[in-house]
Amino acid sequence: MYNSNGRSILSQEAIANYQIPLTMIKRRIIEEFLEENQDRYSLGELGFLENTALPKWRYVAEERIVHDEGILYHSLFDIAEELLAIRDLLETDFQEYKKRKARETEKLKNSFRYGVMQLRIFGKSKSGMKVIGREEVAGIIIGEWLYYKYNHKPNGAINKHRIDSGKVLRVKGYHTYEGLMRIHPKYEGTEDIFEALIQQKVKRAS
Image 1 (tube, rainbow, N blue to C red):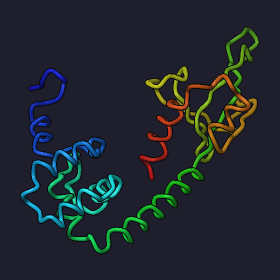
Image 2 (cartoon, rainbow, N blue to C red):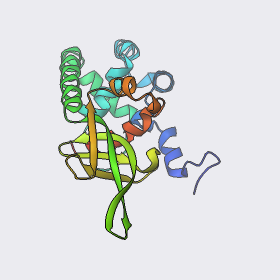
Image 3 (tube, one colour):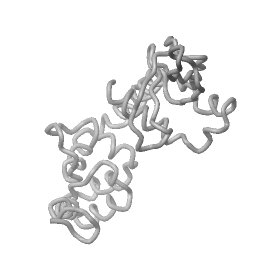
């Protein structure tokens, strides 16, 4: 069953009990949680939790609390308890986490390139196959392949071409979306399409 917001009744009940997705862990809901449950904590504990920055709540939810695979909801009660349990180590652990995430981000950036590829389109003729046109596709290059969205649409199917295929006239790789944009301004405003490819072909595989 679903409510008027399109959210299942079970998920609505979970949120009401402060079992929430990571994306919903925000300052407003933390303040509401602490106000409703202030009797659970000493004044010192409450002050610590109130002054703990939002990224640290999310860090604990994502990194410190063990969940069954597929569980998408995080209990603010569990997060608060873990924050209190590691309060003396929190700052050190959080800084190490930030450094690790920065390394992972850098590694991710180096695992692919943005790319634009010019392709020959072949068709049949009386004398056999011949070039009847050209096509340009843009996407991300991973190894020997350029992955792109059909018609360069966010919901388009993912296709791919080998960068050394005989159909390829030329292919150019760029380390950043901005770099691609400088040479190919027609792709302005389509960063979400490249990001969808990164999510599906790079991050999911890492």
